[in-house]
Length: 332
Ligand SMILES: Nc1nc2c(c(=O)[nH]1)N[C@H]1C(S)=C(S)[C@@H](COP(=O)(O)O)O[C@H]1N2
Ligand SMILES: [Mo]
Image (cartoon, rainbow, N blue to C red; front, top):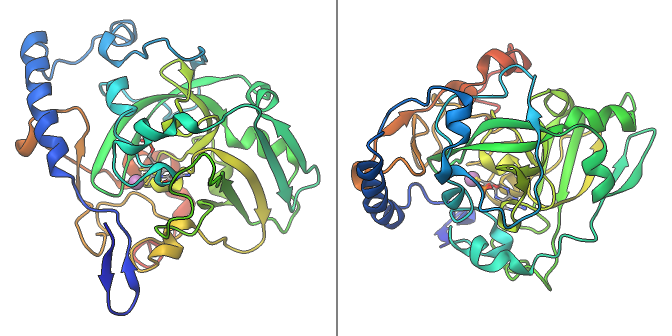
């Protein structure tokens, strides 16, 4: 739903906290918790946690396994979000603005053949076939929180490798200061491309040091399988310390540029979404607080326990240094 405003034309359709979902989810999860008897119990080991059947992928997609990541901070011991929840409650506006739309509509996305073009200020530009891009470096499994600006979060075992691996290979020139991600905008297979919700294609960007940070993941899979279409197949980025919209899905171009690139949500509503978009409980969205979040699948419905949002989504020890001396209220 677009909310019209006098000066800006419209305010973006992201809304804070969707209640109907939490109502049905609450009922379902309550039953699940009662049945399992382990509400709140911590999983003793990786093995026990991995065996948590409800979080496992159903095995319908090709397997894509990764070794446990050796990158510090790339794991969390929190309970994984159910695969079913992570693949049925999505933001992928090319397929509709409702959380259920991507799962319903993204079946039309054609993920093979797929090429990713690396261009701009690099010594070795080129076109990568997706199969070659997947094989460029060893796959790692990393359990990262995905925190949406709308106030919910999930804990997902992603599979991919540090974007830095690709960046090093293409050898950025000295004047390359930012990396821009351009995603697919195909009106034939994406029903909402052509709608005026966003300025298509959906683009995103990172500063070079953010893009080079080992936690920034070029992502091809989750839960040990290739990405489902609704989660951004065949390749997306995941930047765990930033709000979810910084992680563009279904990427077709990675471009190295000198100036800060425009980004989809910043273009749609600059007063609400800045370039940096670091998860920050102390900087509210103009229309809602960012101090807490609701973990999808936690249950409780209307009475869902809200988690305190952590600075940089909990990755402050790893990434805080990137922003030393910056006024994060100004560079939101
Ligand atoms: N191309 C594209 N990428 C996108 C979006 C989108 O609408 N289009 N939505 C973003 C938002 S707002 C979030 S929160 C995450 C959601 O990822 P998930 O559906 O895998 O949880 O994807 C991000 N990447
Ligand atoms: Mo989001």
